[in-house]
Amino acid sequence: MAVNFILLFATAMVAGGLAYFIPSWEERYFKLVLVFAGSYLFAITVLHILPELFVESGDSTKMGLFILLGFLLQQILALLSTGVEHGHIHHPNHHHGVQVGVWTIMIGLFMHAFLEGTLLSHDGILVVHNHEGNDHGHHHHHGNNNLLLGILLHKGPEAFALVAVLMSSMKKRWVFVLLVIFAFASPLGMVLSNLFYEKNLLDRNALNVFYGMVAGGFLHISTTIFFESSPDHRFHLNKVLISILAFGLAIALEMIL
Image 1 (cartoon, rainbow, N blue to C red):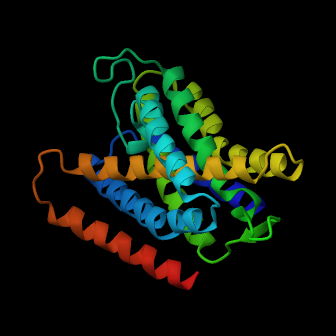
Image 2: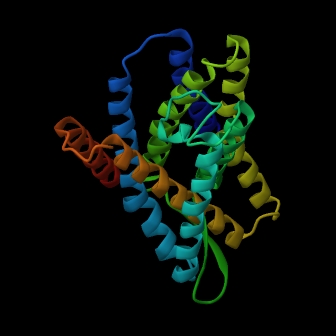
């Protein structure tokens, strides 16, 4: 867990630092990176997270409800964060006719990052109910590193977009402070959910609710990236090839790791 903590924090800081110290960059290259990260996130959600949730959940219909609720929750968080987690880079004071501010963005983005950190709690444990009615832990080490990689690939563009947005409306020292706060969000979600589980403050059902809602959020984010990468509904070969590359890598690593 210590390694995961460091990787989550460092990835956000390094990616945010790139936007912090490099004032000019090519937006088209950022969008290609975003497409790759979104495609990879979608692939591991379909290949890794959803199958385990449905197989190991005692009630697949209820798990589907949690996923749907997570999808809807992410829609609300995206309104607060102005879609920074989707890679949106724009002035924070106006978003689709809604007045928003820096703290609104931070609240939405912090909540999203905190929730996704819970997926890595307890080394990715899913607690399920066996046929005899006893609780037991199932550690899904297979593919767990693939899940971590997917979250890291998502975390990088997210932190970059956040800093790029904040740089347009705040002094640099405050941007750095907010970047540090954001960088701690996912590690904090991982550590606290793990601690609460070990202290019996969260049971298996509560953890499964978190996992399902995070999966729904991932579906929202990754599909939004797909749709927004081609807003004119035109065929872009480079983006299609990047998505195929991301899918292929996710499949290969899921089989190997």
